[in-house]
Structure formats: structure tokens, C-alpha cells
Image (cartoon, rainbow over all chains, first blue to last red; front, top):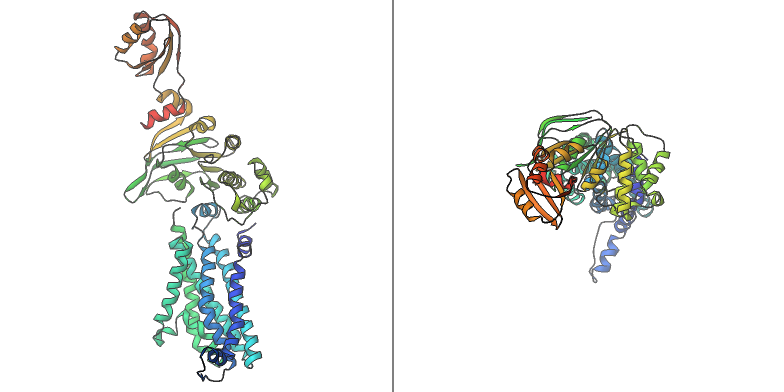
Length: 248
Length: 290
């Protein structure tokens, strides 16, 4: 039994993989449906009022998926990551691990990478579902733009998991770690309202897939990609440093 | 194996450890006793590297340290065998996988080896924690109240297991159960309010720190003898236990040995028997921390 295997077992025995996969794939399937039939849905609830919406295009299916995935999906992802990365939440468990590894990096590394891989895989599978259904219902999408956009979405989720790791290094509790992380991730788009700042922030990557399948330029995301990678490594560095400083 | 020099640890303004000079010899079993809040857990935490001392220094002759907290906790969805196997794999000298089953057997949880530990009682978790602690064959074993949740049979097994480590590993264990310490420890350290009040062998502790008491059986009448002894300034107390027996507490062992027999003779006592009362660790502990 290694710490890597421990994390995979954690993911499967706690059924957290179902939560991750369920939420992303669900929105991957439902998002394009709602985009395609939004007019009919609104009319059925409108009490006879006629609602006029633009004719949906395939990219709207992706946009609908991203919109839901970055809200509900992100909440679930942060919760699952916090449950794994706040390993000192029960100090006795922290003692068991910390007294058996040379460096706390050995604990954080497998937990971060496994949970990030799981979250990214769930997001990507949801994106595949959204691509398939959008294509069937509304027409084809540029595969290159979709693929790149999905990868940038995964990068954003890797950043979110790194923030969870860093916050867990300070706050210890799973609940507080989740709340503080969500707070940080919500503040970023608010800061990014100013366009000259926003295009450099990790939150800029959230909408990348929507923009890229509509023919947006890849170059619009280079700055945010570089900053997100740097911040991810920075957050992981802080996670290790803060976890090392903690006393149990 | 362990030497500390003026080790101190403060939590805010409150000192948890105060100028502790600990000396644990390799291969010994060291018992750390003290009342609640004495600093035992903090001291074990500092020795294991989980906490940082505010002042002082320490020398620990190994990096292969394993610590068992008083209430071990593991991921509830792991089986007992997986917990011990994880501990084995993480050890700096991972032994054979057969060692896992061996430790599960020794700690008495082999029957529950494939059960998820989430349903374990506290006593079973303590046994599992001990198995996970010992599976890596550590050089230094730090045990925080290892028997606190065990039934008498479990306590017996764990104490036997600890005793078997003598010479193979150095063990420091804290306990409220003084009889356990008296049974398995070579050396005892008494902590109170973060200060190490005594450190030495059990023999030194019991002889050097016990107030000398003697049980004396006399032929009646006792009253003139008791009255005569109570007038002597080197005698602290004379208690009548029954119509034929008294307990005399002296201020010091030297005075008692030199002057008790002549004092009895001078008081006209008819002495049937006289014997020192064996001091228990509990008696001595209470004397030292009082």
C-alpha cells in the first residue's frame, strides 16, 4: 500500500468519484439540451407569454455546460479536494502520516495529483458529453478549439485544487478549507471585471472553451495560462510550507 | 538515544514544558508519568518532531521514530490489514509483508484484519495503532497512553508487547496507570506543570523519594508506646492501624534506621515484628508531585 494507492482507494471507496463524474457528466448532457430547447422551456413556464430567443447554435450547448460546471461542479470539486487535502483535520491521522514520511511533500503530492486528475477527468468527460450532444442537436463544433478550451478548463481546476491545498495548510478543517477556497475563487472574477487585469487571471480560463469554439483567438489566453501555471506552483509551494510549519 | 537540554515549550504565555533535561538510554523503556496537563503529550510531540520547542535543544540518536497518539484514528474505509501495510510501506526500512500479519496477530486483531476500521472500538484502534507503530521496526517508539482504552486482557497483552521491545528499541511511554509504568519501565520521569521533577530508575525513585514508613506489630498496650513515639521530632506520624499494629512515618530513612529500634526499646514496647512498608509508585508519585 503506497500513498498513491491510498488516494485512489479514497476516491473509489468514499464514492467521491461518483459525485465528481455525476455532476460534470450530468451538466454535460443537460447543458446542450437546455440550450437547444430554451425557447420551448421558457414558453412552457411563461403562461402563454411568447418568448423570443435567438436561434441556438452548437456553441451555446458548450456555454451552458461551462456555466453549470463552473458553479455546481466547482463546488463539488473543491469539497472533494478539501476532504483529501485537509489531512490534518483529524490530528491523529496527521500524526500517523507525518511521522512516517521524510517530508510533508510526500503526503501532499499524491493527494493533489490524484484529486486533480480525477476532477480534470470528470470535467473532460462532461465536456465530451456536451460536445457530442451539442453536435447532434445543433451542429458541428471546431474540435481544436473545443480540445484546447477543455484543457484550459482542466488547468483552471488544477489551480483550484492547488488553492485548496494551500488553504488546507492554514485552516486545517475540511469545511473551512472549502469555504475559504470558494471565497478566493469567487473573488478572482470580481477582480477580473477590469479587462486589463481580468485577462491575466486564472478565472479568465473558465470561459475559454466557449470562446474558442466560437472562433476566439488562442492568444487571448496565453497570459492567463502562464499566470495560472505560476500561481498553481506557488499555491502548492505554500501548501507544503504551511503544512510543514503546522504543529499537531 | 534521547537527550534534551533545557527544553521548553510555551503555548502563548502558558509554559507546557519548562527547562526539561531528559536522558533516555538506548534500548530502555522510559515511563513518563504526571497528572493531566503535566506536559507529557507535548513532550512526546516535541520528541517526534510534530511540535517545535520554544527553547532548548535535543539530541535524538535516530530518525526512525514512530509515535502512537492516545486515540489513534485512521481512514475509516481502510481495513486493519491495509492500515498496517500502509505503515509498513511508509517505514524507512519496509519489512516483509508477512510482518503485517505477524503484528496483527501479536496485537490481537487478526480476526478483524479485513474489516473496515470505521467500526472499530477505541480499544481495537489502540491495538491497531500499536501494530502500525511497530510494523516498521522503529528504533524509537513514542507511545502516548497506549493502554488507556484497553480492557484488562488487552492491557496485559500490550504491556507484554512493550516489555518485549526492551533491548530492541527504545520506548518512551506516557501513562496515567502507574502500575503499568512500575511493571515495564526501567526509568521513570515525573512531570508536573511542564517541569521534570524526577528522573531515574524505579529503584532510585522508590527508595530515594519514598517517605520511610514502618509497620510495627506490638503486644498491647499500645497507648504509652504511641504517645512516646509522637513526642520525637524525627517522627512525622504514628498511626494506629489495629489494636496490635501501628505505622510509623519518619522524616528520613537514615534517622529511622538509626533511631527507631532504640526509641521503641526506650518506650517499653514489646515488639512482635517490625518491617519497612513497601512504597508503591503511586505513593511516591503523590509525594513527588505534592
